[in-house]
Image (cartoon, rainbow, N blue to C red; front, side, top):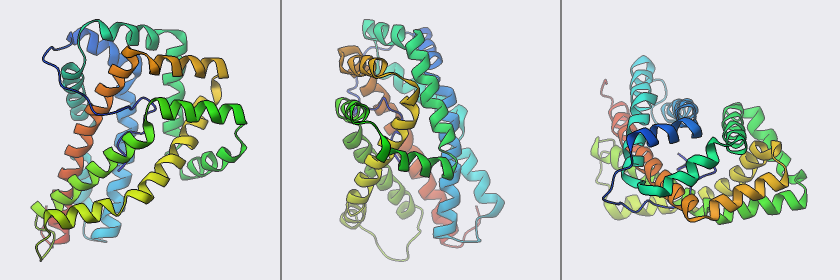
Length: 270
């Protein structure tokens, strides 16, 4: 599973003692359309669950697996968890510039474009076309996109988050008794780490294709303004909190998927 495919991810959140005002968190969720983004991620997660069934226990999941996967990826539960993580990770006046930006016409244009691209790329044909379109990016646009990726540390953050969620999945498999032999910590870490080169390559390819599609509606000046916001202290604080919240969510989902999959792999009914 990818850690965060939003364009806003930066790095892990640093916990703070203060709690953000719930009304402002509600407003942040509204202007960033987080509930809708989580809806798309729910669809991605269910598709991933189908892949797990096909690869790990073909023909054994059926309606029971579909139900468990739906419960694990429940959008309402995910949104509650995200709100709690946001409240713990953001506080004080640092929220104001972020709220102002995403509530602005440009901010709404950006969130709408990101959501539309994310929804469109659920279609394999659109995903493939977006990847192929990277080769046709104008040099100036590609430089801006790569600058955006660099400023937000998107590749490293997504790779680390992806490895973490893969490790959580393996822990779920082991704790659920999926294997007839002992799989120790070192073996799990070695298996997960072996995936790093492929994950890094796929992350870079996906980011360029997704951002290229999403920001095709933005002018170079608008995209440059978004880069400036990402470089600001407020933008960095928001990104840290966002990535930290998604990291917690994905690790929880991955572990629960591993636990559930283990039962089907070992021949138990859910």
